[in-house]
Amino acid sequence: MAESMNVEAMKIAKKMVEDQEKYNIQALELENKTTVIDCGVNVPGSIKGGELFTRVCLGGISDVGISIPGDLSDIMAMPAVKVKTDFPALSTLGSQKAGWKIDVDGYYAIGSGPAQAHKFKDNPIYEMCGYVEDSDVAVITLEADSIPTVEVADYIAYECGVKPENLMILVAPTASLVGSIQISGRALECGIFKMYEIMDFDVTKITYAAGITPITPVDPDSVKAMGKTNDAIIFGGRAYYYIEPDVGESLKELAANLPSSASDKYGQSFIELFKEANYDFYKMPQDIFAPAQVIVNDMLTGAMYHTGFIDLERLKKSFEVIEIINKK
Image (tube, rainbow, N blue to C red):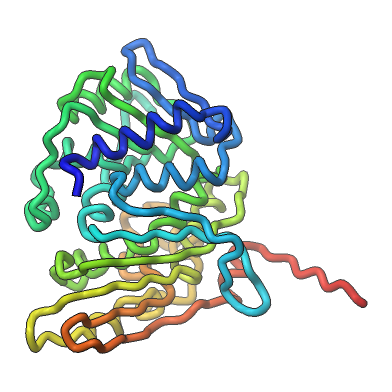
């Protein structure tokens, strides 16, 4: 593995700046010399831009691709995000996890990406993975509706202990193509987070992981977009985990409780649950945030546990699919 996720992510971000016109994104330099890459606020963004944005979220150490189409059934197929990683715990919980709430002078954003390895050095996931961030650069991705100000950039740079000119900020709204792609790319993260935070499982035993989730249709309403992007994972995400357990440790119960359908709240859409939580994301039932379908491979016994299912009808309802039948 590379010595620094921030260094690896910076390489990707610089490539995005270099090819910004091709990707329908725009690089801006703030007064403090921080580079901001607009991936959907004032520009349309692109499929490739979403793919690269997602790779940055994952710390530059995981593969991301777009499947066109990503088959969900015989009656509906749509583009999907594919994520593959040999560093499951580190790339998801150590980078992709949206763990940094940015709130500076009225500017609010949800922060992801490897800059968190600077900000949250005491996160036990780094020690568990044997990872130490040792770089003088930082890369953060923001889910936000506007371009961050110089004050926001100064705050992030200070918290990361880097110079503002060594900070790269990528930003995309939830209600954008890049936003849809990067959120659909979080199925693996949701499953690993559930294992770690709710099931108290040692996620460093996950040796490899792969996932695929349909790309959410873009909705200009940010609240509806939030609902659809989360429903994409809950009702349509698929995850594959290759796990090397301790001798004699069974993974059957882990697998059985891992998919979203194992939650008592399963069946309600994200928006319905969001309303029940008084629109406070952090008061929502955590166990619902998981892939719809999960396969766990026990690498010691060779057993493969298949659990959960693609809930096509609920997914189509969330996506507001309008069926048009053409008569021959």
